[in-house]
Image 1 (tube, rainbow, N blue to C red):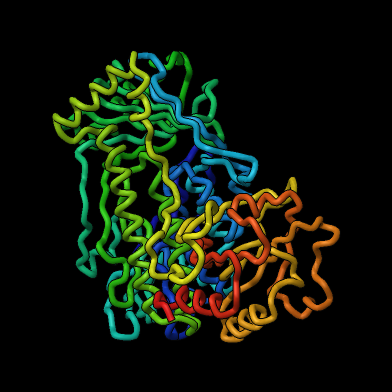
Image 2 (cartoon, helix red, strand yellow):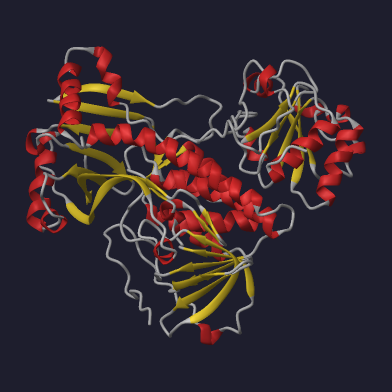
Length: 576
């Protein structure tokens, strides 16, 4: 019988709520559910909210009765914030988080490299923002609880999975005992130690690194900016690396590498923690500052992925699908992209608007993204934690040269997480004008945001389905294109058209002839900002964005036949 902790977790800054468990005796017999998501962390919660946007109900099983213990993921990227905006929690993150864009690397008391993440006036969100994971989970939980399509069940743990041709049967344990749950699709989002991955006897591929790090969250008043600080080969931790991050509410994250051979139990002893934290505070000139411990843990750097994220009726995402090192803030941020990429496809499949082949495409795209991330993350990991004598010699040579030679300093760059570009996706239109554009986001690229007014951005108006950006006045949209859009919408495809006009706002509204088209909106771009960023030089051009906002087609001049072909390919992966 599953008995999760029912006392609030200890914390000096976060008030934990213990939720009541979902008990089978209090509910009628279970029907067949379209989707069950196992794992109520940030990725599972986001996927549930994304599915609900497509009108698909789900059961969300969380084995605990409260949000995560400790700060865990604390850095969220711009692309993650754009995804969180889609599910309605980005404003709360912005209100309570700490934005930043600079990273500093130090060696022998000197700053040898300063990273500056790109940011311009067209970005609604900064490159990175720091917020403890408990707060983000709480915001997502509250959004899920407010959504009637999401059945969030606390204290429910999957203990067995039996796959069939058209469904999966789960055994779920609760504080009063087990029950059986049937679902057309099971989504495994149950973390790095995924029980479902083990139940299906699946193996991760890639590399694990020997270097271990302690995470220690302390409350301390430090007069330092919100910037990433990395210290290489400090006097108190020779040959190793130390990282510092500011978190909200006066909390600081200290990550430090352990000497070879030291066990996690030894590293987490109170005396060891006190000695090493004091040594780092002394290094930065604040040995006199009192501090208080909130949470600590040990982690290892791993670059691993499943070879396939679709196994029978089970789909994997987040840490259940791949394990990535924290260097470059890749874990949760990659998971959000998984959730967004999976939810729109699964939504179409559950609504009968696409075949399960679209889910195989999810696996192909996200496995490819994972391997690209692993290659990038491996470079950072081998620099932070050299796995062999040869890598250590190379790393130490870079450290030494960086004191006098500027050309080696960019090697400190930690290759921050970024959205994957699906340049070779089978969903990309094969008969559009992609090759003829001189600039703008190409096939598979994520969207470019554009500031339309002091308070409004392009991406504020997109999302929730396929988006066709039409560059021109609404009354110039060809009748056959309008008819094609209507036909696809009648079939149930979530599709809307946004006309980007260079008329001023007063004259850019819908004409009476468009009043019967709720799927049509007009945005004013009098300065031509959207035109410029999307490489459009003349009216009648168009872009087609998938529901995850990645580009799947673009045309210098759109016609109905080519739009129809692009939508067919984007929903099947096959060119008509």
